[in-house]
Image 1 (cartoon, rainbow, N blue to C red):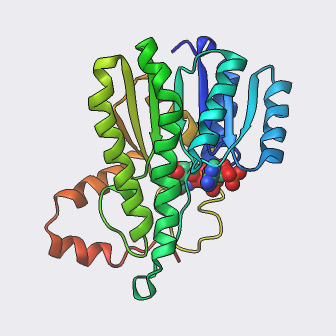
Image 2 (image 1 turned 90 degrees about the vertical axis):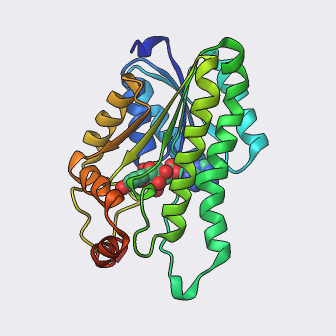
Amino acid sequence: MDWQSKVVMITGASSGIGRGLSTELARRGARVGLVARRLDVLGEIIQKISRDGGEAIALAADVQDTMAMRKASQQLQATFGPIDMLIANAGIGTTTEASNLQPAEVARVFSVNVIGAASSVAAVVPEMIERRRGHLVAISSLAAYRGIPKSAAYGASKAALSCFFESLRLDLQPKGIDVTIIHPGFIKTPLTAGREAKMPFIMELDDAVKKIVGAIERKRKSYAFPWQLASIVRLGMVMPNFLYDRIAARSSFRE
Ligand SMILES: NC(=O)c1ccc[n+]([C@@H]2O[C@H](COP(=O)([O-])OP(=O)(O)OC[C@H]3O[C@@H](n4cnc5c(N)ncnc54)[C@H](OP(=O)(O)O)[C@@H]3O)[C@@H](O)[C@H]2O)c1
């Protein structure tokens, strides 16, 4: 992929995967619009990108705010030209206590992880359709595939996100727009930091970023990694429920 000709908008760019993708794509020559709420942190990342010879701008916005996202998209287009790619990465994780279910907490997770991604798409897709080109990338999760303990809100939000983007793919493919859904396992970022639970096959951020960029370059429709955990998850998908429950009930990654 010729990154030097690409304008990319990345949400959740102030931390973890989004930050890693922002610096890596800028290093490869893409001009990048960094979306997150913490403008001061985005400023530091942009300074680093500039020092390394890249080009990026900060777009302070909450992905839940449709108007702010549209404004961010317009600002990016005014600065670098038409947007070629959106990476809808902003997301939050939370522990769901089933015995003390908090609907407001479930709504918050869906609002950022699903509605936020929808607002991000809505902010960039009209011009992509007009140009008959573009690439939408969603950062979902292996947690999208089956229910796991204490993750009801997070897992359901990621299942919704994956289904949402798959549906978009069917609608937008004939209009020349590619859609890639990434399903990562555990990656060392602030989101997973501080958990005491063993997270199997947890990856270093740099390795994960390279895998995500590779999948985007190959225009994969869906990409799940690391292969070891993705294989276990696929096995879980064909397991009968009685067996799945026995194994999955013992696998809490949120302690
Ligand atoms: N780490 C993992 O093991 C893992 C595994 C699978 C999938 N994922 C997914 O990967 C994505 C990134 O995760 P991460 O591990 O990099 O998390 P992280 O380090 O906590 O970063 C989350 C990012 O999302 C942004 N964000 C949160 N709420 C936002 C909002 N309302 N509006 C705009 N930006 C918002 C944060 O920026 P501000 O606070 O500055 O707004 C931050 O930049 C998430 O969707 C997550 O579900 C992560």
